[in-house]
Image (cartoon, rainbow, N blue to C red; front, top):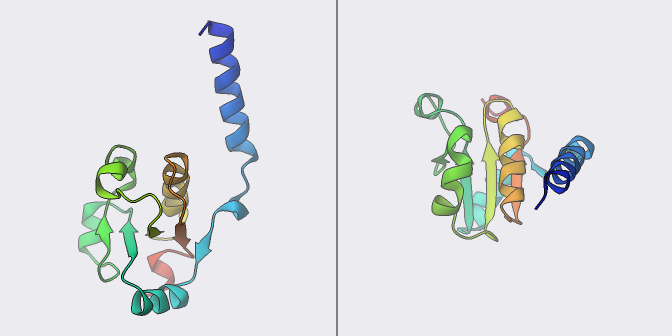
Length: 121
């Protein structure tokens, strides 16, 4: 691929990210998450905060994959790309970034917890 094609490809990728609407990120309330936890076993809850934050308090049965490790560990720790995955962080910002990372990797059933863990304590 020549340099012009590479530059055009990068520009297109940047433009796609800029035009992406926050509204296109699927979100879930804590009340709905609690209901899902009771109703199904096919759910993975992922805390994308740091290990220290995770150790200070978390949602039951959540696994910790810090946002900074998600890109390289997602496909190892989250092998089923169609499984229901709920992401959360402190206030919802990192979980939205994690959502984008997983979506780019082909995950299809992901949600970000509205307001993060701060919204439930």
